[in-house]
Amino acid sequence: MRSSEIRSTFLDFFRERDHRVVPSSPLIPPDPTLLLTNAGMNQFKPYFLGETEPPHPRAMSVQKCARTSDIENVGRTTRHSTFFEMLGNFSFGDYFKAEAVAWAWELFTRHYGLDPERIWVTVYLDDSEAEDLWRRVGVPAERIQRLGMEDNYWSMGTPGPCGPSSELHYDRGPAFGREGGPAVDGERYQELWNLVFMQNVRGEGTGKGDYPILGELPAKNIDTGLGLDRLAAVLQDVDTVCETDLLAPTLRLVQELAGRPYPGRDGGEDSMSFRVVTEHARSIAFLIADGVLPARDGRGYVLRRLMRRAARHARRLGVDEPVLAPLTGSVIGNLGGTWPELERQSELIEQVVTAEEEGFERTLRQGTRLLESAISRADTTLSGQTAFELHDTYGFPIDLTLDAARSAGLTVDEDAFAELLENQRRQAHRAGRDRKGDAVARRDLYRRVIAEHGRTDFVGYSATRADTRIV
Ligand code: ATP
Ligand code: MG
Ligand code: MG
Ligand code: MG
Image 1 (cartoon, protein in one colour):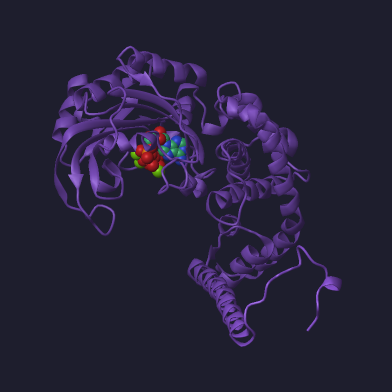
Image 2: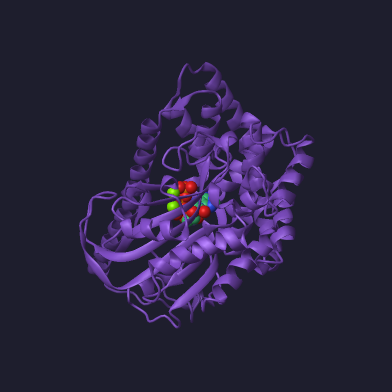
């Protein structure tokens, strides 16, 4: 099943169940507390908080998501991307658990044709209600696992709505990992779909999971998220998200540029580089299309890290020419029909990636030399000082250094790096304050001049020096 059919099957299924389609919100969220849109529910937050009345109690969407926190996983796991599309169905105080569970099962087994015997389900520790519902649709007890707060309880990270979740996993077989269900191995039993049952209200807490549950929500909600890439990998029977039709044309281009074939999932570091370049090209194109531009911090730095990481991994594959423009071009060619903003912004995307890659190229060579010599001298650990110099002088984001060190079997003194970075930040802050101090000193000086000499009138607009009497 091609990805376009996976999307339309999802939407048709929930349209028949009275859901209204809501367009994806942009990757730059209207919500100021969020760096980038990272889930389908983001744009519905005001409905869940009861701040706004939803126009319809049931919604569905195909949401563009960016998850930079997964950047280190890209290429190392088969299932993580920094950009992906999340399919979701939502209930705002309307239907609840029974429907959400029954529909998820029906869609998976009847419409996507997934093998019911390879589906595993997780539920929250004390959520017997959810377990009963899964049993009722036919999931045997041995394929239902109970997990704790960390995996199967959801909140917004602040006091407010929260609740248990339940996830559908698919067994990709022994080639992917150990037996024993999702509690044992997340690569073999891949999480495809997360169903959140928003039924409680939580209070304040200091860390993950240690907040009190204050009571029940008056109106219970459903929020679900199904990763399109992962489902496509399963339905197209390919090993990783990079080989699905969402990314295959880009992976093909990386192979052409590198002049050799992708070595497959088990190709070690080489295989990882192929996948990093392929996957990041898509995030880069989508971020720029939504208005993110490279910068020293914030969203712009996320984009810059992705571009530099992709460029460095392309160099590792032996590609010497610029890659970001042709690669983002292939993303636009492949996904521009579904996401027209890619087409609309294609010129901007090309300009931004070309300029960034040229700029990076200059320092990349020197930085790589420094990095390689530091790696060859190190026993077990790269110093924080080296990581900092690479960051500060050569523009190597820390994850590039971490990648390279990890590939060479080394660790990086990340604490020392963080301390150096913090020192620098503090100094910059102080310099900023000094500049402010200078301004105050100047103002005081002007005040003294006025006090001594009185105010003067500026006549330069109407008179020249020849007209004025110099005293
Ligand atoms: P995982 O445990 O595999 O990291 P998650 O629990 O962090 O996934 P959720 O926050 O529950 O993921 O998001 C809902 C769904 O979105 C997941 O079930 C998965 O299908 C998809 N998804 C999450 N993170 C990614 C990612 N980095 N790349 C691709 N798809 C993802
Ligand atoms: Mg995750
Ligand atoms: Mg998970
Ligand atoms: Mg999850």
